[in-house]
Image 1: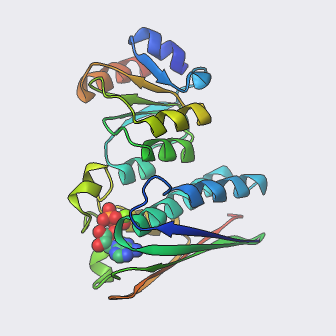
Image 2: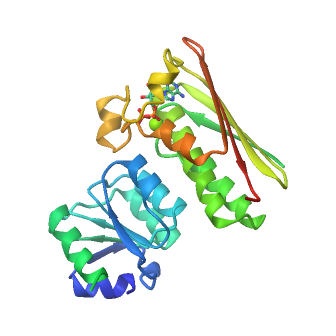
Length: 111
Length: 138
Ligand SMILES: Nc1ncnc2c1ncn2[C@@H]1O[C@H](COP(=O)(O)OP(=O)(O)O)[C@@H](O)[C@H]1O
Ligand SMILES: [Mg+2]
């Protein structure tokens, strides 16, 4: 499944990095601890988080993930948006809380 | 090949810059992508530790056909008990740093897990020195 397909299925808002919407999704990781994500996320995964600062994109880019999903309608900071556009790694948002969106993504990816 | 980067304490916006540059260089050298990932995880954690815990620091990278060696030297408070600092979950990070999602106390353990060789020495009141080696052909 691509990031664009996921966004349509789960009604996610594309906030930035739309040049990367054709990235293929290999899995997902839910965490707000950056070291945990750094150690645990792999290439092509989605990262579900409530962190909005620019270090999110540093990790997203270093680990070559597919996209970042912000929960609870959180909005990324300006430099986070800028780096998302530069790297072509989309930031998507949902109104849902972490548990609910993670569950839905789990179901979709394991269907 | 030798590369050098400066890191400022408190500067989280630029933290990750050295890791990103080193990643590009290793890609150009056609290093294995799993090995590049290990280098990047270790260096990113070390870079963030200077930003989070020290005043300023220098990162020196030496790359040859066999391995990459990263030397990190900071001016900072140093680490009084290195064994304790290496314990997963141990952190003295400020609450502001924790709110950003840093300060989980997993940085040094992540470095050790991803390096082939890892040496850390520190002098209280002076600073901390890290040597991270990753072999490129394994
Ligand atoms: N460069 C450094 N200078 C001073 N103290 C450090 C440095 N690196 C690590 N430490 C100490 O070791 C602890 C554990 O480091 P780490 O495992 O990276 O966790 P964290 O950075 O999340 O606190 C830190 O909280 C800090 O007390
Ligand atoms: Mg750390």
